[in-house]
Image (tube, rainbow, N blue to C red):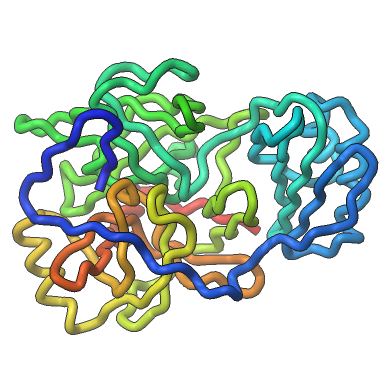
Length: 340
């Protein structure tokens, strides 16, 4: 389900149906608005009290804008995204364990961003240059979970079909970036491995840049206005399990139920004709959601468990189907990176 920016991508094989998802219930975790501190126009906290964040918020707001990240890090927080806001301000999001802090203060936003599940991805045949126009024929998908390979390096997952395949089996769109509209923001590099070449699994491996300003964080990103979910491990794809997914088109926390035995004929049909192993759900998805994270319903502590990677929507009832995460990890000889 890649979303094409300028030129439509022809669908091959199965006929796929796309539609919008279903919103998560109102009980989903949100930020609590805390009292403002000098130098900050907004302080939000999640899974932590306002009293506990007041000190770090005040210190980060009093420092020069470029030093806010270092101030938070020194107090045990891990800043992972910074985005320009309005009127010369920027939002800074940081984590400490399961706790999340959002701070809005004056100044120029630091160049802080990196890989996390639920982010918008660009796939293109030509090289992608940060700040330059998105190449013609590029496709937009969604990022899935962060993994660690046996050699110790980090990588990010998405759907193999987002990169496209030529008739000779080579990859059509190998260059990738995290999108920060209106242009590519963080250039990730070339697709490292397409799992579908050696197994019936619609998954691929991307590089996950690391460093002070290029974070790789084991969370499901929910945008700047909602705290991220912390990825705590994997879960079995058992029929009847309540689940959610996030996609760049349908949005965050689109929730439903994992179908059981009655979906097996469809899943077997997809395996035979589409060449992919999937589990299907009651939830709907949209073009561009492909590659996004599928996870268990969030717990009250803000954690979720990985179930798989959004693959397609099929049939009269438009069920979203996904590639299970565990076979992908096994094929890559990788482990899921988890948070506190």
